[in-house]
Length: 405
Image (cartoon, rainbow, N blue to C red; front, side):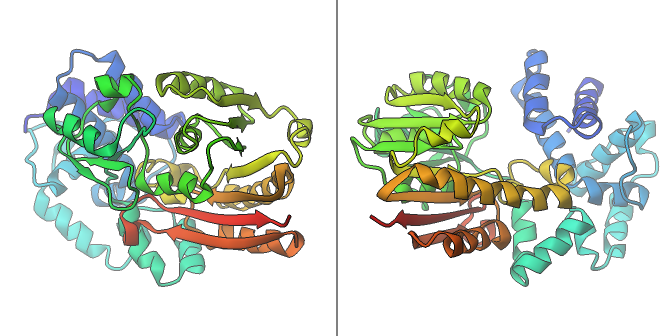
């Protein structure tokens, strides 16, 4: 593999934006590729994978390259290039004779890695505080979750059953060389063996599928909405689960999608149009009155609450460097407030799902238990905790609760 300066500068530019400006890795990479349309498919894949890999292994790579943890920003160009060199050597590639790579060799890198011994937080490339929190909450399970969270997530799509079925979609994607195979966790899921810009595929543009992790697809199914029901997705965001709910409702009934950030609901409107979904009503949450107006009106209620996001580090590796102990603690208060306040929208006899993309029990089972202690008119029907190490999906928790009639 030959390295070209323009590509390496693209990588280092992205790293600066992520670590110096605090921007999200996926947004940075998308804009970088858009700004460099002349790059070929291999070049684009190299830049994207290099950025994600360096972000994922940020702490480890610094220790291997400089025998110390990452310093505070800003970062010099030659240092970021050296991180790329270490990454490539670990993958078995050779390096060009550039001054930034002087003194680097595969043998020395491997010796440096062995010298790290049992420093798990460094080897698995996470902050010390996060390692301590994971051990505290998950015990022995944390050892299995760490490497699983550092794996590269597969590209998974969800069939829009309003327009097609999985078998038909599998055949069409196979024709186009995407190497699809059926998911094993969700019966609407398809895993794509080929990487590429699936958002340009004609069938995506026609609304035949959405990109959505298999584990995430189980959340709407747990809520089990029926055609003709009045359903509220109270933390809808850009609406991935709302679209799934609409397909389960066969586009019949009323689906109210709510969020505190109105711009996300604008994105949902665009997606709903592409998916041929017409039962969604978007309502920004402007104050507590937005919730109060819907008191006891919902047959089904989805609370996919804000969380630490520790279950989706495979897809968002930069999150572990942006998180803080204070944020994780504070988000638990937000979750408890949403559960207590938003649950009022549910009719007597109605059901709701509380969900997170976290693997921490304190954000999951702990929140549900506290809610039930204070709300005796609710009971827990079932719950599911998906762990990346056990299920091969992102990490999710979901609990189905029923309000007494």
